[in-house]
Length: 170
Image (cartoon, rainbow, N blue to C red; front, side, top):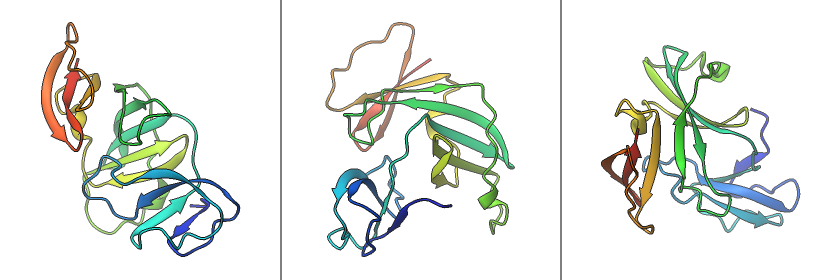
């Protein structure tokens, strides 16, 4: 894909901040993902992790149904928050092209969810986006370390996952 990235044990091209992620993360929610300064060696990372350059831009989650984008949502978060913590997800009207890297994918997948930062594919899930199964246009996560304030004209849905208690949806 042309990204500056590599598995644990490979040197970074230059000292800089990089995102470190698990190579495989069934638990989701960006658990264990973090941004760290790396001088050169990545030998101190967990053997199941990889490092990657940090991408900037709009964060989109896209549900593709038979290679056609059916649901596109934009995530908004504070740069200072942990990588799992989002302020809100908003459904947007945007057509996203199916990543050509999956054209020769083995298997039969009706739905594939992809996450992008800018035009860079960063995650792939063989499922739909579960946060928009309530026929909602907006999802505001409620976190365990924040006050549970009532949102007028929204419906609260309990949907616990990691440090998220649920969502205000509309």
